[in-house]
Amino acid sequence: MLSRSGLAALAVVLSVASNPARAMVCMEKSMTLDEVVDTIGAQKGCESAMKVFQDCQLTASGDVQLGAAVEKKCEADFMPGLNMVRKQAYQREMRVCDRKYRNKSGTMYLSFTAFCRAEVAQRYSQRALKAGGAGR
Image 1: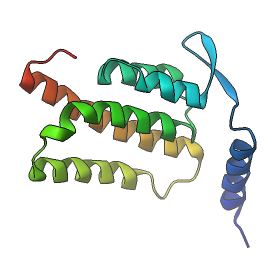
Image 2 (image 1 turned 180 degrees about the vertical axis):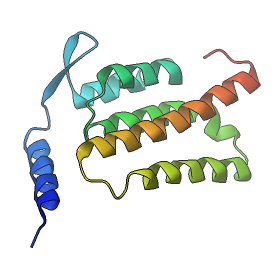
Image 3 (image 1 turned 120 degrees about the vertical axis):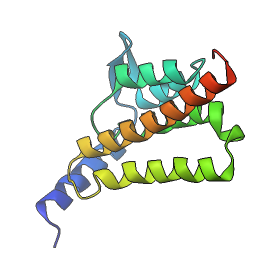
Image 4 (image 1 turned 120 degrees about the horizontal axis):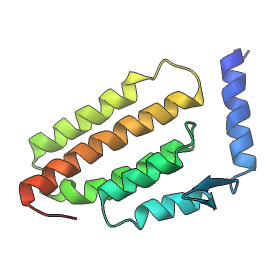
């Protein structure tokens, strides 16, 4: 038998699955989640991608997709130049984010995890750009 939290999570998943194109107001216009992900991907760099994420956050499970888009954008700044030791350190920090709220129920904790991961990627991007003297 499912617990209340399990039923609540199932209801959220089903409601999201049945309304995948639900719009939100972001950056003063109505956008779907996929459009926000595309907007994040189209940003010039990690900092502006994170700004879009912060401006468009849902504080719910949809933030997982937005955060993943930020991670991808930020990783482009540093991932190719990471040696094995730094790559393992990065992955370890990401796992810390994954574990931080794993025993909590509610979609806001998925959002918190997504932000934690995006912030780790942002820090690595900032360090790489500072070390390289680039101003992306």
